[in-house]
Image (tube, rainbow, N blue to C red; front, side, top):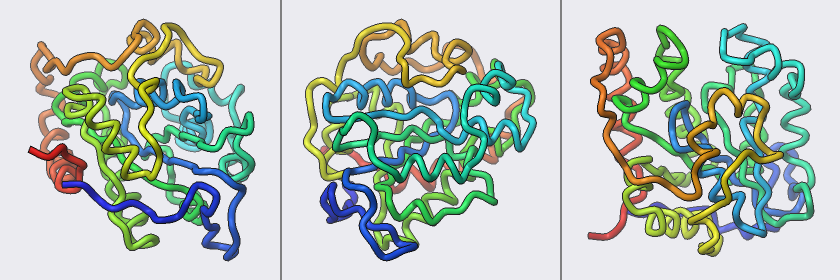
Length: 267
């Protein structure tokens, strides 16, 4: 199925708090969880000449508030903005470099409960999900003993419902496996749902890091830095660790519910 998107044009994104137009341009908030293809998706959008990208802008605040022992946490906190109010002010301000589109890669679990959601009204939202079996097999290699909150799935579901409530529209959902199986087809669907033209540049990119990557990239982005395009889908060769079997059961129902809203290609 394909889902409807907002009818507002890029220059008409509305600020629901103040009843006025936000700074001109289309702001795309892509909500993902960890160990997904979110960085590859950011590379894809960053390859468009009309798009500026941002990498997990609430991460430093999340780490400072939760004291989670993530790789490079101290450096992230010291080099990135830790005041969520200033982050929101930036994300809703003028789009950097005068671009008409701003693609913002967000981790859903970084949106802690105290962060005001009013800025959601200035964004067009979409969601990127991944089979929890593959996600957990990868996640536990970076974060020992992950919790349900660490997966970002309950937060994705909460934000999804918040967006539906605010807009009356079902926001687009992409499944990582389907993107990897058919990148051009799924990216065309996403662009159509967001009201932007698909561009062939989205299918490839240059190797290496980007100035727009967070300082955490050296800990997490080795695969995407070596890539030049979306890879083919390959099931994880190793079995899911027994230590996360219980967590997998908790994740599965949330994932399956979001899967019911995903964009799919016509048969």
